[in-house]
Image (cartoon, one colour):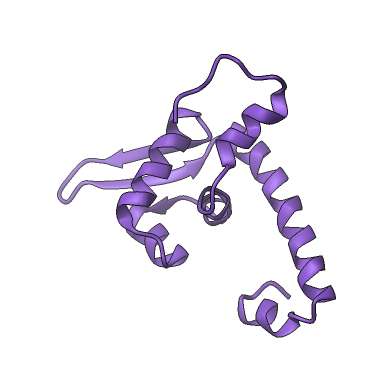
Length: 118
């Protein structure tokens, strides 16, 4: 995603960075620590590798995540949250908390327990 030059407010820019179904989930997984592409794909589930790579590249472009590449064979890439990513993750974490509260109100406690969120 290209950065626009015509934002009306900072919130609009932040929204562009994390919008979509998968980016908040990617940030959530990376908040647990540095992770390889294959480990991210396995942890997230239901997301194609093509889509994951696309979102990772966009997050790299925004400098929300970083990437390390190790020498040797096979090459191994790991992704991690940058300082900017840590700040954005704080917002994602608050959104997660609100979602948990709403699911509890909707009697979805069992689902939350299955996901390890309670």
